[in-house]
Amino acid sequence: MLNNPDIKAGTNVLCVIGHPIEHSMSPIMHNAALKDLYLDYIYLAFDVPPKDLEKTVFGFKKHDIKGINTTIPHKERIMQYLDQIDPLAEKIGAVNTVKNVNGRLIGKNTDAFGAKKALIDAGCKIKGKKVLVLGAGGAARAISFSLSEEINEIYISNRTEKRAIELAKDLNDKMKITAIGKNSSKEMLKSLINEVDILINTTPVGMYPGVSKTPISKELLTNHLFVYDIIYNPLQTQFLKDASEIGCKTLNGLDMFINQGALAFEWWTDRTPNIKLMKKKIVEILGKI
Ligand SMILES: NC(=O)c1ccc[n+]([C@@H]2O[C@H](COP(=O)([O-])OP(=O)(O)OC[C@H]3O[C@@H](n4cnc5c(N)ncnc54)[C@H](OP(=O)(O)O)[C@@H]3O)[C@@H](O)[C@H]2O)c1
Image (cartoon, protein in one colour):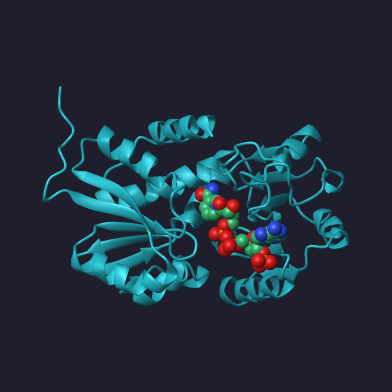
């Protein structure tokens, strides 16, 4: 029986940075997969306030930290400190995964891949469909850019309408699709829902601990929709409960989270992680919350 490598001077370090960071599930998921493959790596979490981002990134580069995940609020600002950015991440305007290649920091967006793969694996037909995205933040950008490779028409509805219009303009300009940004009033949502096949929540509304909240009231939903909520804590949000009660097909954010992590893992280590194990670990933790 092989033993997992002990932590030693040469152990490779991976990490996630965010602010706050204590609730991140990434260390649990990645360390389980690293241990499973007996890889000489460790994955840590660092709380990095925005003012410390630049010096932290340069410190990581100097100390040969092999890979970095970023979460709120660093996905956009980290880009200016990187040596190279993948073209899709550049278009999205956000990086959630960085690899240190011989002292050069390269950035990617694995959220985009993770979200689209989860939808496809759940049996959702994307090609040629019309999509409504609720929210216009980092996750909305990643999802709408990756889906724009397959679709021709997308609506963005956001509490702050200006941000929805800005994202739609970016999608029009960079992906050459019809994208329309709107506010998130009840009347607006009612009219947009009739136009689309896929409805995606990228706002934190309904996330733990505010689990009774929903981004769209139940009476606006109709059963022709495929409803996707990228929240994974809880696994079944009120939004998804409402949608499945009226007969919609639904998907939660767990597979997106696992997929983005698995792609980052493969990129850093050149090994394929045990996705079932990663998922099991997250579900165990969620069950305890
Ligand atoms: N499953 C996964 O792997 C995964 C990956 C990334 C993110 N996520 C989840 O996605 C969510 C958003 O993350 P993000 O990185 O996109 O955050 P973000 O950049 O801060 O964007 C948040 C978006 O939600 C809107 N919003 C926030 N609070 C709201 C409220 N009370 N009512 C209505 N709209 C509200 C914001 O609207 P304004 O523009 O008006 O502020 C903004 O459009 C989080 O719940 C996060 O956990 C999941």
